[in-house]
Image 1 (cartoon, rainbow, N blue to C red):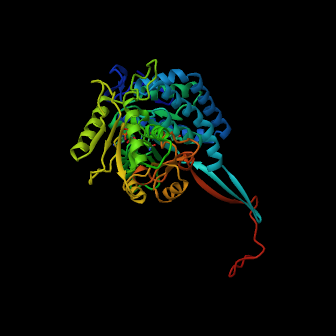
Image 2 (cartoon, helix red, strand yellow):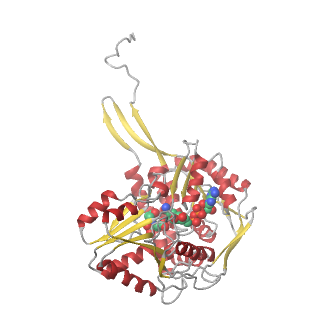
Image 3 (cartoon, rainbow, N blue to C red):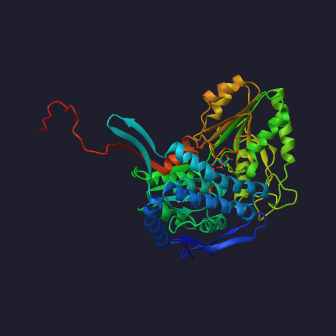
Length: 488
Ligand SMILES: NC(=O)C1=CN([C@@H]2O[C@H](COP(=O)(O)OP(=O)(O)OC[C@H]3O[C@@H](n4cnc5c(N)ncnc54)[C@H](O)[C@@H]3O)[C@@H](O)[C@H]2O)C=CC1
Ligand SMILES: O=C(O)CCC(=O)N[C@@H](CCC(=O)O)C(=O)O
């Protein structure tokens, strides 16, 4: 298998072998060897050698390459969606939307580039004031497994648009998706060295993250890894670090007359992508009321009816397999740990087929637990808190080190106005699911969810630095000199 792309040349890895599997059936999808430290170094050198020429290219020429990539994504969309589904277990209907999001990213990034960075000129007496933006140089980009195409793409596209060159290190769980992505970039006419791909496990990641000659690192992944990287970059304020991490996201439900609609939005928030979205609802606050009881009852029955099946099933499922059997069993363990603390299972999360990532969605009542761990359970398990006082529910919703997404389902707009003022999160929705954020808006969280470098529409902000200039076409003596100055 081609594993690494360095200077637009495919290389076989010289590091440890690894493979990816289809979590729906255990079939091998991709196998290869990771890049060793020398190969990571070669990739960084290739990016450095290409960077000045790439940044010197007129913006319009860089945009042509990006638009050509978008055209390749369109041309190969079904093949790509199939590859993503096979390597992640996600349903084909969903991976088609992921390829669509990748395609749309180019136009959105170009618009954001001009609006968030680009060049502005302001007149001033006897001179001109310019604000321009320049690329950082060579950046490392790390991607997660849950959106192995779309989320790395959300860093790569704005980064190279701004004139940076990239070394991309994808999740070791989705190497085939990464390889296919780069094959499309090559078809799009990407110049050598602009995007370099190094595959591998944690050692490859460490070799890249610690490389002395990177000017920055853009990361999407777990809060644990993000915090490790943040520590690693401590003392290096000159290197730009953008961290998009996880969440322990709350969704509060307060008096919703359309019970079915409320249940729909809760399911879309908690169980889409088999709960493997950083924006998924993890904590569900339901009022202790007849309305709350009705919503919970219908949620339980609808959850039991959620179709879980293979990515390519003729009748498409709502949930496919989780990324691995290890992830699936991790969710069973998390559920059991909550039960041992006193939680009550309302719908049991179960592994559906040994050797696969298939699990059924789970709902668990944790109201009685006083020492709830503030951790992200990255799977289809919704933890229910029954509450009586709305303000106390908001206080408990904020009782987390994270702050990525949050939502309120409520008929009363005053309740939302109050919620919006008090809730601490980077994505806050009303009467909509809290997943499915738009690429045309900033995407990022506070606390342990990020480092104040929101991505998506604001990704342009961390892909370039501002340069303010005052310019005059001649050197001239001012009419009046400052006091104490004599220039004859
Ligand atoms: N905020 C956001 O936009 C998103 C956050 N996530 C989060 O990502 C997690 C799931 O994705 P995963 O791939 O499991 O994340 P992960 O943190 O395990 O891996 C992410 C990337 O970092 C690399 N990596 C892992 N440990 C490293 C180390 N010590 N040094 C250098 N590189 C290292 C991995 O190889 C991979 O390329 C969840 O916690 C989820 O919440 C996922 C998607 C989006
Ligand atoms: O990054 C973007 O272009 C928009 C943000 C986005 O696509 N969010 C998705 C994925 C969530 C995740 O990161 O797992 C969402 O909000 O569902």
